Image (cartoon, rainbow, N blue to C red):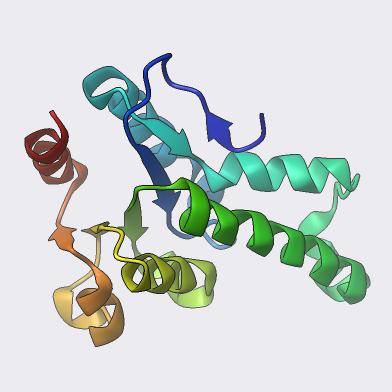
Length: 165
């Protein structure tokens, strides 16, 4: 089932969980697991979790030293990353209703989150950004692509309950 987490039998909405992976603590899995549980319990929503999908793609390629491949086998590394990009962007474009984004210092060393936020905005999908940085450290681009910006996940949850319950 890859990165899709089937949360219930009666799915109303699908959230894409965007945020740093490559340079984040534990690949950004912790917050995604927590919000997935909440979305299931409170909103009965389905989730696309790119951390799960990425691991599945990497395992399929038997790439145990995956991050080292950037230096040791750059052409194969690029092929794997392109598969990840394709799956992630297809999920944003074709399969999600909105994005939940964690924005912290690790986002500055990546590019996927920026692209996902931009595409979601372009397609008219709401972007709910949980910002862990000073407001001046968010680019005007990302700031303006975000429908709602929160300082913490509790405020995000309140807004989601207001909109989707």
